[in-house]
Length: 324
Image (cartoon, rainbow, N blue to C red; front, side, top):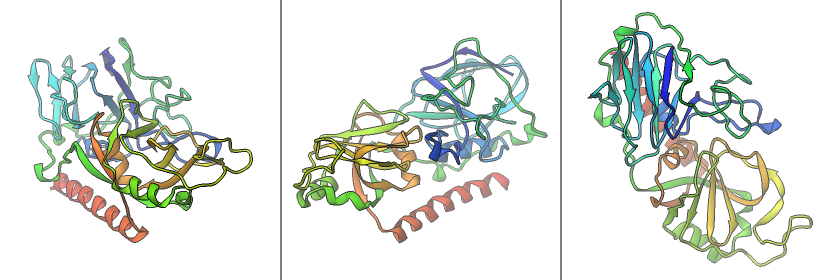
């Protein structure tokens, strides 16, 4: 059992996500940065999908009521066990009575705390992930609060994990400026030629109005193609008749703003979507602080599959290194 002494800014239970219910209006939720989440679980000997804690910006203070092994990954956050700073991206033995605390994240947004045996809250719609908008999953469908007590599963030979660490060369770098790769969508025709050029050539800045539902990007302008919105779609040139949004949809709600939908996305709406961000770049977006800058780079399906192959190769390298 883990006793939550302080809940932090926004600490939630997440696994890899809730799938199979999107057509019923339920977003997948799940870890915003799947790479860091997966590696945290592997470090402590869990399956990749095991439930862990996702920390946003300011972490919790947790008291452990039994011996276990933990790992902290993701955005740098200077975790401390009692009064001693502990390394990230490494399996750390925890004794009964130890207290884990954090500084604010630096250079990134989300950190992950995996515990051997996983956070064993009951599944809801086949997942332990917290979906805040619908208050389902996780710990009562909400963020952790002071005084909560989290059940932890058991895992044999947990202490054998002590000292396992991810090589420095395989750890992610959370850069303040990067490219977002996406596949162009069929409604990119809603943009004028100049609008498409501006969309691709502008260095977009991440707004403070960003969260697990979607990230907003500003400091550019995207002219729409001339023409009237379809009947029933409203008067704004960005409006379309409602359709389903995949996770990663790039919405253009007006000429000055872009929204990329993340794990807690609404499942549909009436803004034009000009493309979809590839899955592995969604984690990079979710780790980006306000005022970070990005460029949108269109790729073909073949290029997207090659980027996914490279992403999976890095994960396999990490997994192999932890088994040696």
